[in-house]
Length: 304
Image 1 (tube, rainbow, N blue to C red):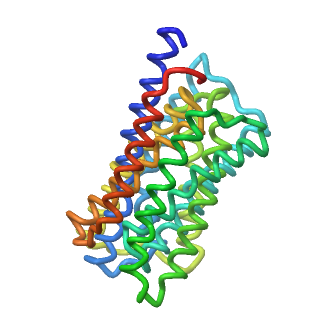
Image 2 (image 1 turned 90 degrees about the vertical axis):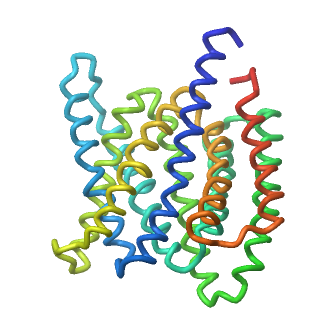
C-alpha cells in the first residue's frame, strides 16, 4: 500500500469509528425518551426525522446546483430511494420498537449481527472475497459479541417481551446490512455526501408518511420530548450518517461494518453509566475482544 492509500485508509477508519460511536448514542436517547415521556416508537422516530430533514434538504439543494453535479440515472434514483427507506426508515422503526422491550445493551449486541450479513451479501452477490485480516477481525469481534450477548441474556431471561424485542432488532440488523451493502456500491459513483442527503430525505418522507397514515396529527410536544428529538437528529443521525458514508467511500462496506462493531461496546458502557443497566464480567470480556477486532481492522496496512 502506498502512502496516499495508507492515509486514505486511516482517514476512513477514523471517520467510521467516530460515526459508530455517535450512532451508539441512539439507543441511549431512545431509552431515555421512553423512560421520561409517554411517547411511542413512530412519534419519536418522526421527531428525529423532522429535525434532521432540513440539513439533508439544504445539502441536497446545494449539490444539485453544483456544476460538477452528476445527475442520477433512473436506476440510481430507485436505488437511493430504496436504500433510504430500507436503511433509515424500516431499520430505524424496527430498532425503536425493539427498544421498547429490551435493554439498550442487548439491542446493540443483536443489531451488530449486521456486519456478518453485510460481508455475506458482498461475498454472495458481488463475489467480494473476505481477506485474511478481515476474517480474523470478524472472528474476534463476534466471539466477543457472543460472550457479551450470553451474559446479557442471563439478565433478561425473565423478560416476557424478550423474544419479541429481540426479533425486531434482528429485523433491524437485516435491513441495515442491506443498506450498507447497497450504499457501499453506489457511493463511489455519486459521492458520499450527495447519496446520504438524498437517501435520508427519502427515509424522512417514509417515516412522516407512516406517522400521519396511522392517524397522528401535528400536536403539542413537551420540551423534554422535543429535546430528545433534537439529540437523536443531530448527534445520533445527521453527523454520524455523513461520517459513515465518507468511510464507505474510502475503505468499503466490509471494513466499515467491522469497525462499526465498536458500537455495542460504546452502548453497553453508556447504558451502564446513564441508564443504570448492569455490567457483567461476560460483557467486559466480550468488550475487550470486540475492541481487539476493531483495532486489528484499523491497524491493517494492506489489501484494501
